[in-house]
Length: 218
Ligand code: FE
Ligand code: FE
Ligand code: ZN
Ligand code: FE
Image (tube, rainbow, N blue to C red; front, side, top):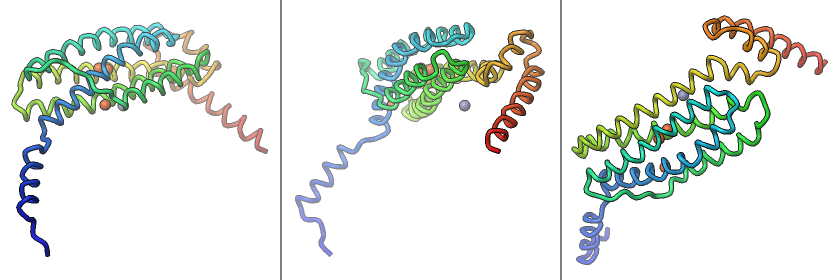
């Protein structure tokens, strides 16, 4: 067994003083989200434009406004730590937005375009929800109540955006993505009858699709 010599003990002490802690993790993740939000601001107008459902366009544009406010909130969070805001490339957001671009061009002109865009934006929202959940918790642990409060506000906005998208998908756009035959049904009937539409619209379509598949395979 070799015990650490004098110089090695010094090295251990230096490593300890340089050890990264929750504060470093917090600042890192904050810079990551600062970068993420600015990329999202650039991407959302394109996604709104790609949507063919006016309700979805409106949902995306209203979250764009919220997102611009989030950048200001993040500026304030940096300030509450006595620091100037800075970004650090968020590779996850780069990737999620690239996938969003890809799915938007792949499904352009398809009845599934709106469902496709919702799934792409929801992936971004879920990433943000996970990140702000951590940041909020860490700000509390670091004893910065101003930062914790701002991060909680952003977290709630991300959850709200995700929820609005869920509602649009469930109430009409996923069904619209099934194809033409049930599209007519959804256009004919009023919004309050949507749950009934869903049941009536989806079943016959599945039946005919299943039948078509079995016919072609026999
Ligand atoms: Fe955001
Ligand atoms: Fe990130
Ligand atoms: Zn979800
Ligand atoms: Fe968001």
